[in-house]
Amino acid sequence: MHKSKSAKFFLLIALSVFFAGCGTGNDVTNKMKDGNKENIRRVRNCYSMFLKMHRYQGPKDKEELMNFLKTNERAAVNLERIGISQEQLDTMWVSERDGEEFEIRWGLNGQDDHAIVFEKTGVDGKRFVCFATPQELEEDDYNGYLTGELKGASPDSMGQMVSDEEAVNQ
Image (cartoon, rainbow, N blue to C red; front, side, top):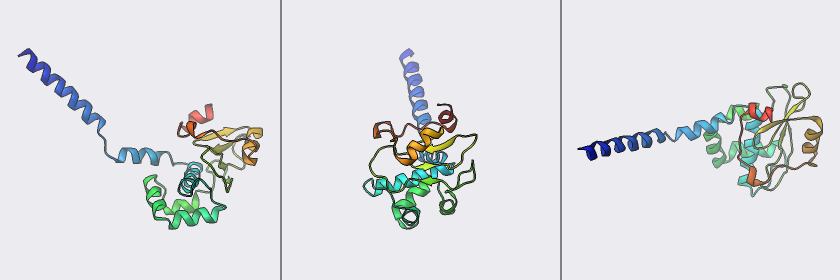
């Protein structure tokens, strides 16, 4: 009788763990959507999508990127998956923090974690630059990344997303 209770107990634990780990496919989608709440991330992720679908050659300008986002079927599926609507495509180019259109480094190539999207003015003398996650930088570093003098991280460090609060406190 003791073995029967132990077996039932372990079965109950195993089933609990199994069902606790089973979420809907929407859990991943919701996390991806949560990662695109700010315009700087939306622009960066759209640019990255273009890079990946074009053998790591970036768009030459905003028009080329927008055309791709609005006409490519795979892009449309990915945009929906990451929570970027067609309306947001037209409004995502402006920073919520300083109200100015972002500076973009067009025509980048390769798989490095490029600094792609830059706030023009920022807040309190610091401006966000978006790598895999936005980072608030001082003037010298900002200018170094904007001109390409400073380079982003290697692909090995990509995808190490942190919250905006963590990025600001780094």
